[in-house]
Image 1 (cartoon, rainbow, N blue to C red):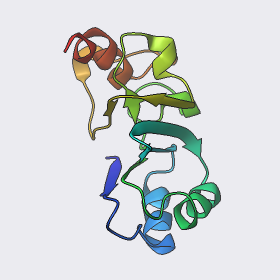
Image 2: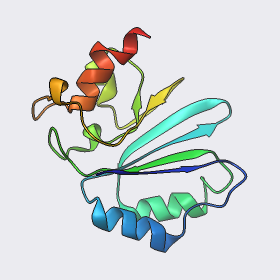
Image 3: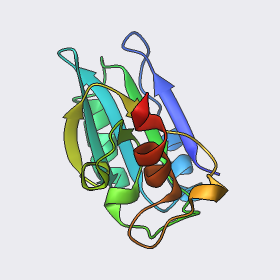
Image 4: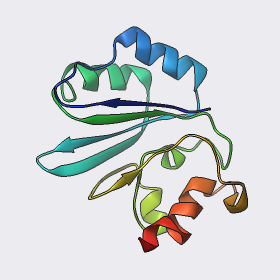
Length: 133
């Protein structure tokens, strides 16, 4: 099962060891979403070293969602990492770096929305169901 870590702007980031353990047990991709100047920014497909560097510099005083993926649907391409923007556009859901108003990340899978190698079940669920709200 994937690991999601939430950190608000007042708390210190997870330690390097905590991030390393999360990546060890969930090796199929790392994605983050953070708030910067009232905009949510998403970066997906991070390597652990890059994340640790971001954690020490950019993310220290930000609200952040960290997602460590354990693939259950789709491939392990960077674009399939969480978090995702709330959008009906599947190509936007695959973008590696973007800004948006709302993000989605979760643990588990949507059996009725099992995708292909191109899209994950979560991307299809967001596109067909959540984006309507």
